[in-house]
Image 1 (cartoon, rainbow, N blue to C red):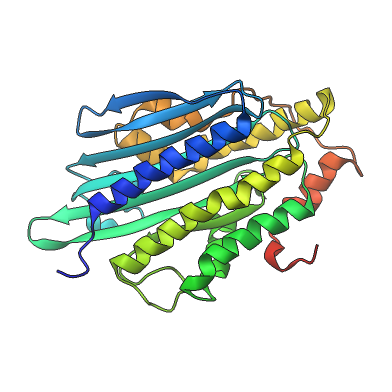
Image 2: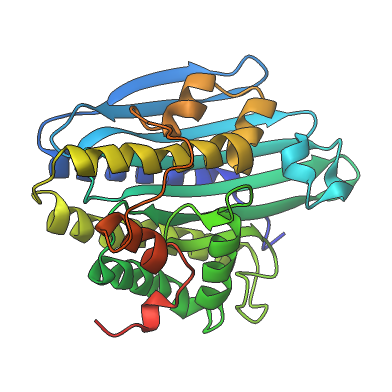
Length: 316
């Protein structure tokens, strides 16, 4: 079948991307390197976890790649596809989370994943998902504009409607319902990208087109993030900024443990807990009913940045 999914090609790409991401991040940090743990899943599959800690730029972060299989998809993967409940599956992906030390450098997340669900008497069902988002503690218009324009540039070859749809999906997904606020300034998010191609792309699909879209997102990530790191890494900060960073990191923890489908899938599928929870920041604080001082930089984050905006269209 001409357009059959090529799982091996996807796996090779994800492993190569992990290598390139880690090399680039080590070069930017300049002090710390990644520690690697190779692990196996008793029920099938395994992965390669790489964690960086106590560096000049990155207080903690990780870049993981994994590939697991099983006899039945976990409930977190069939919530939007109930017809696949009980089918065997293969899932693979690369996941990156970075928590810089300097509060002026945003935390960030990247995830790219591929699922294949199989049944003896039916063709395989397959789909891609992923995206990236940015979580600043002290926002800068310049950074938000650059981030979203980079995301739009990656999406544009696949159709003018792809970025607006993926941007809106990201705003909706990274929303803490129990707080009625976003985790950060968003980016792009997509799921269930299968034979019909990227969302908003006009239906130009097939495996090759969907895989090309996944790679476009993966390839633009460092172009979107590293210029922000270089602009902010040497800004002077004190205990006030560090304290606010730890407070806002609490929202990151809340989202990952309460809302994130990826975390739930990893735990429900019997993945390696240490690898799944490497996304959590190393130091966090929780303050009861705390509010920023009106007119402060902390208040500006909440009022100006933590609201969905069309950043790609904002003039610097």
